[in-house]
Image (cartoon, helix red, strand yellow):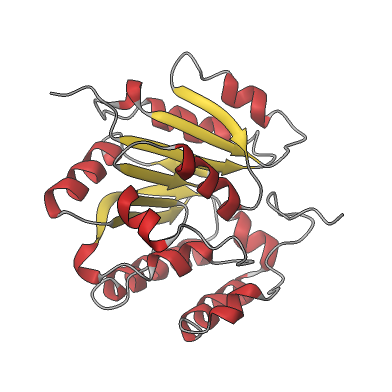
Length: 248
C-alpha cells in the first residue's frame, strides 16, 4: 500500500482552546492508515486564547501546521490552496469524530463511488432533548435531500480537490452558510453520506435560540437560488461567535 498522502485536513478556528483538544484527540485515534502523513492545517483567525499553543502541542502526534485564517470560508480556502492531495477534509473545531473508523471509511467511500463530496451525520452531545431532536431532523432532511439537492455542513465535509477547485472553493463574501452554497453545487450522483457521525455541542442553539436556528435553516433552503441572500447580514455572527469578523 502506498504511503503517499492523499488527504489534507483543514480546521478553521478562533478561540477554540476548549474544543480543539477534543477534536484533535479523536483524530489521533482514527485507524486511517495514512494519518501519519496527512497534513492538518489549523487556520487560526487571530485567537486570543491558547488555541495556537494547543494545536502546536499535537505536532508529535499529527503533521499539524498553523496558517492564517479569518471567517471560516477564508480559513478553509487558505488550507485548500496549500493542499497538494486528492482529497480535502473540512471540519469545524468544535466537533468530535464519533467512531475511530470514520476517516478511513469516508476516504474509501469517496474512492469506491468516485464521489466529489461526502459528509456524515451530526449528533448533539450534552444538550437538551430538543437540541438532539433538531440535529436528528437535520440528518433526516440531509439524507432525503441527497437524492435531489444534496448539502453538507462544514462540520465534516470531504471534497475531491479537483472538484473543489473547479467550483471556486468557498464564497468568501458569504456571511453565513458558505458550506451550503458550495456543497449544493455537487451532483447527487457524486455526493455521499457515510455513517458513523460526528458529535457537536449545542452552543449554536444556546447562542441564537432554537426558533431562530430553525428559521434560518428553512430560509436558507427557500433562498437556494438567491445568492444575494447569503451576502447579507443575517445576524449569524455576534460578539459571542468565535469567527466574528473584526471591524476596523
